[in-house]
Structure formats: structure tokens, C-alpha cells
Image (cartoon, rainbow, N blue to C red; front, side, top):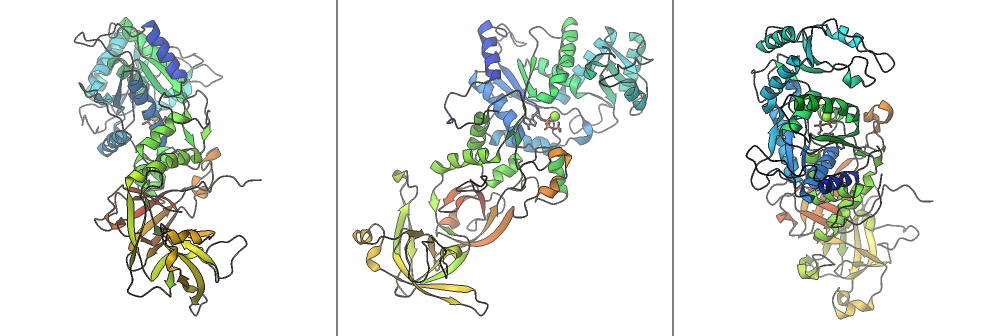
Length: 582
Ligand code: ATP
Ligand code: MG
């Protein structure tokens, strides 16, 4: 997979799908289609078809960016369609979060004239009518074998299947049974409607696949109207055709399903239900991301076993989790663009995603100071009542964004590891006798420190040089190697800061079917009480900052209160997960 360092160019990188679309546009393949009112249809209509049975994750984001992105780039339209044909596992909660997530990623199914939001369950009557047609035309039959008999007769890759004894039922017999299935006369699994194709086909998906099954279950949208439900592989091509989809894009595991997709549409086109050109299915490689899991079932397990704090835990690869973590929609779009689209499965490294995120945040995020692991610094020669103002750019590369002002006083908070009693080799920060610059403030010289009875350093003492203030003429006379950040103890804002890291310590947490819980990173979250630059108490939920020297942080959208933000670490400034060099 291409995973190079191309910049997020305005013109999207080409890929095989763009190639196909451009060639279809050149030949006018879909040029003469009109809608029911005779209006011309766009030549590119794609769809994103989630099943509302879980929360969307970063893998779905790839499919969303791809489908909506192609529609945008080729003046087409993209539909959001809920593939809600399985009554048992689907819920309104999931519909709502999926709608929210697609919007948050920056896409819309409203093309200015129409809302292209669809539900496969709205097609149940048509799916039913088409099934009756297929029965009448001799392309489908009701099978009354037990589930076990059906499995046994299906054969396997090396053995052809055996015809069901019910395969020779006349269309009239099958139709009568199918209507009784619908009327609720049978229990679950007593009969099933199957396509009549070829039990000896080398493609297992063509061995008379089921198209309707009995399921006495309540559906989140159709209620108890139906007790038979269409199968996914039958519903999908028909939904695509009903919506005039031109390019039906899905992941590689559906490649073997394509012959059935085409079979369904061909038969229904023969029956006059659809006109050609029919929608065509194209497959691309799904996104696999290291240090993450993208299986709905396993993500559910993390939530249910309370290994994480819900679907939107900022360590989750769900869209709601990524959003709460502080990722921007732009960074996700840029990431999906950059990793490209291919036809062979591979892994994308988490550091690629984090790199794009930093690239997006760096120019956007205002700078600020935050002391995450506080240690008191006392400037002994600073007058007790004196408070003076320091200033720093909001953003070093964009002076037009102005300056931030914050006070300095006698007692400050500095980072614990900006002081060492005995300096290690190459350590330029505070230690007795050494001078450092307090970023945007004065140069100070360390004069000593206090310890408690356990030997822990409780405060560091220093002297400041009044003529060394940053931005004044005198400052140039001081040359120091260390530059540390700080906040004035009397003025700083205390806040909870959650230091998130990767949820898994292993790049392939669920490789080879192993228990992914063994791969959890024990240090994926640390909560600290930090001291922040004054003014940060006004941060609104989802405001993002660069805390200088630490990384990017966001005011948590759930737990921040007015005047009392809680911050999440989005990502550190540098990739500390890179493999050790040399
Ligand atoms: P399930 O196992 O429940 O079917 P799913 O991940 O396939 O899970 P869907 O709701 O069916 O979930 O997926 C919606 C769309 O997102 C599908 O078109 C699917 O191909 C695509 N998709 C899902 N996972 C990925 C992924 N990792 N990379 C790219 N596309 C994905
Ligand atoms: Mg699926």
C-alpha cells in the first residue's frame, strides 16, 4: 500500500477507482440516465451502507471519505443508506450515532435539492415483490430442509453441493408457500426462499443462496410488520439499483459475492424492474491500522467488559472516540486521502495517522503553557508582592494572531523533570548552579532545593536576573542552553488532564486470532492534576491547544464544565513510538 509522504495536495491522488470512474465518464456509460421525473441523473452515484449494529470506526471513515469524496470530486452524489435488514442486532441508537459521525467527518447526503438518506428496510415491499417475480420466473424456490440439512448439502470448496429435494417445486407451489411464510404461518427456519442457480458452482455464494428467511422479530423501523426478512446479499444489489447507484464500492471480502450481485440484477433487469446500465460492484482493500482493532464485535467487547469507558472513550478507534480524543475531521480526511485505495490488504501504521494529525493541528492550535507534573520554583530575590506581565505569541508562525499575556510572580510551577539534583550528562535544565531561561520570562540561576523527610524534592530555589526578561534589550546578554516553561502559582488554573496513549502495546493486537486483551497497553491513560496558563479556564469543549513542549490537547467534550475544563492529550509533539534507531 502506498504510504509515502506526499503532501495533502489539492488534487487528490489517483487510484484505480478514479481510473474506472474517469473511463466511465469518458465513454458516457451512465450519461443518459434519468430519474422518475425525467431529470438527468449524475453520472457518479455512490453510497455508504452501514449496518446500524454498532459504532463507526476508523475503517468506516475510510469508506465514508472514499464514497463521499468520489461523489464530491466528480459532481456526483453519495447516499447514506442504512443496511437495516437484520432485525435482531439493530437499534436506533446506532442510526443516530452513524448520522452524527458522517456529519462530523464533514460530509452530507443533502445535495441541495434532495436528502439522500435511505433505509434498506423501506425497500422491504419491493424486495418482496421482486422475490415473487423471481419465483414465478423459475429463479427461486422455497426450500423446506432443516438448517443442518442445508449445510450438509452445500458441499465445500472441494465438493459440489447437492440439490435440495424441494428444488423441483413448481413456481406455483413455491409462491403459495412464500406467501404463507409472509403471512406468519411458519416458525423461524421452517422454510427459506433460495435463488435457483447452481449447487455445483465453484463459487459457494452461487449455490442457491438464501434470499428471504423467516424471522419473527421486532424491527427498529418496521416494527412487527414483517416476519420474513431479506438477506444482505439479495438486498444490497437491489438497494443499489433502486437508488441508481453507479459505482457500488465495498471491501475485498465481497469479491466472491459479486457474481450473485450481478445475477440478481440481471434477472430483475430481464423482468423489467431495472434498466441497464446496472450498478457495478468494485472492491478495495479495507483499512487495517496497527495498534488498533477495527472489528465491531471486539470493540463491543472492550465496552461491555469495561476495559474502556464506553464507545467514546478517547482511546477507542471509533469515530466518537477519535472525536473526543481531539482528532479533527480534516486530519481524518487527509489521512484517508493519503493512504490511498488499493486492491490488496495491508497495514497502515498508527504513526501515519498521528503524523497527519500533528500536521493538521500544528498550524491551527494556539500555544499555551501547562505544567503537568508540578514542582514549586521559588525565585528568592523576586519581591513578594511583585507581579509582572510576560507575553508570548499565540502562534509562533502567525504573528497576526496576536499575543497572550500572563503574569510572573515569586512562586512558579515548573515540570518535575526540569530539575535534577544531580544533572545527568547533557542535561541543560535546572540543577544547582545552572542557569535556564523561563520561557518568555527571565533567566534564573538555581541556588538550592528543599526536601521532605522521605527525600523527595518539594521546592527548588533560584535567583532571577531582573534585566534578562525576554523581549527586552538586556535579554541578549544572557546565553543559556535550557529553556523551560512555567506558570505563576498564584495565577495558574488547576485542571484535570488525561494523558492518553495507544490502547494497545502491540502493533497487531488480534493477530492470528489471539486474545487482544493480552495486548492492552497498561499505560494507555494517566490522569494528572495540572497547572495551566491563566485564561485556559475559558476553554470551550473541543477547543484545541498545543501545550508547549508537551503536545496537543483538547478540552474534553463530555466532562468539561464552564470555567472548569478537563483536557485530553490528543497526541504528543513527536512520535515516541518510532522503532529504536540503530
Ligand atoms: P460487520 O461485520 O458488522 O458487517 P462492518 O465493519 O462490515 O461490520 P458495515 O456497517 O457493514 O460494518 O460497514 C459499512 C461499510 O464500511 C461497508 O461498505 C464496509 O465495507 C466498510 N468498512 C467496514 N470496515 C472497513 C475497513 N476497515 N476499511 C474500509 N472500509 C470498511
Ligand atoms: Mg458489513
